Length: 111
Length: 112
Image 1 (cartoon, rainbow over the protein chains, first blue to last red):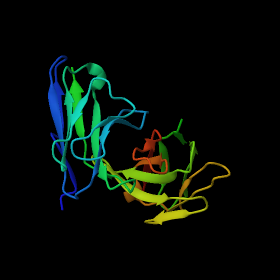
Image 2: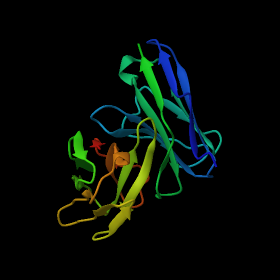
Image 3: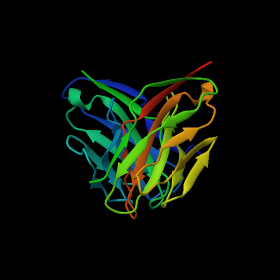
Image 4: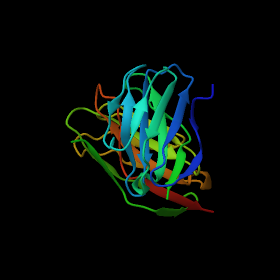
C-alpha cells in the first residue's frame, strides 16, 4: 500500500493563478482532511470530507475549495492564489475517529 | 473551544539525555490525546496516543500519560538518540469528532 500520496510535491504560483492539489489514499478510508502548516502555528484544518460526495469547512476554509468525487481522492483548489496561501499543505485520512494518516506534504510558494 | 498548548522550542539535547516536552490542553468534552512526529521532509506520523484519563501511551521509548486533573499530556523519553531529531506535535480530538487540534510543534535536535 502506498498510504496517502500528494501531488505535486512543490509548486510556485504567481498571485492570482489557480491550481489544484491532489490527495489520494489506497486504504479505503471514509474520512479525508486538508491541513495547512505554517511556522509557529502548527497544523490548521482547511476542509474535510466524511465520505464520497461530501465536504465540510474546517478552521481556515477561506480562499479554498474542495471536492471528493471519488472515495480515494480529495482535491484542494485555489481559485486565485494569494501570498498568504504560501504554506505546506498536508492531506490526511482515517476511518471514523481513529488515527489519521498523513501524506508527505505539498510545499506551495505564492509570489 | 478546544486548544493545545505545547512547549516552545527549539530544544537541543545531547545523546542519551532525558527529554520532556510539555503539552496542556483545553477541551469541552473527553478528548483523545496524541503525539505526532514529523521527521525532516516527511509528513506527520502517529507516535503515541491515549484515549482516556490515566492511560499511558508508549512507543519507541517515548511515553505520555493522560492527566485529566492537570489537563496535560507531557511527552518523555529517558535517553534520546540522534535519530529522534524531529518536530513533535501534541494534538487532541474530541470524542465523536473527526478533526484534530494541534499544538504549534516543538523542534528537537539531538547532538552526538
